[in-house]
Image (cartoon, rainbow, N blue to C red; front, side):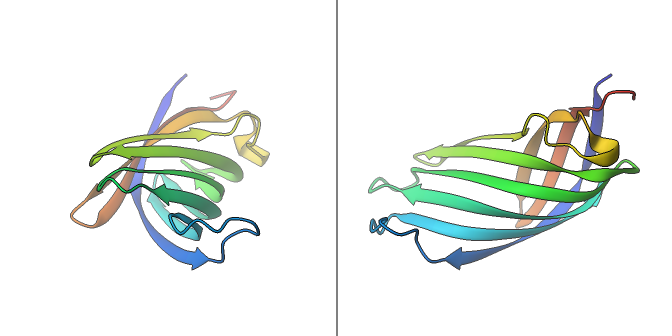
Length: 133
């Protein structure tokens, strides 16, 4: 059965040194630290790579984060994979649970998360399934 979870989160993005051999000034690496509230009470840590282009408002990013906490009362951890692009200001984002990454009471978790940023505040809508629910 598909379930819905919603809430807010805060994120801290910290620039990191570029990986060896990457000298392009338009590629950036960042550490991510998040706190989720609402149906997902958790923290996460992750890494993001982002790249800009000479065209204003066009860019791309990828990220992986490990989320640890409780999802509607079920304790465990899981990985989220982000893939995002912006084409001249029009964003497209996909955030999915990495297959078979759920642990403990979240083993078998699958799902997709929609992230919204409005007036500087971050929120999420998470559609997911966990075997046995």
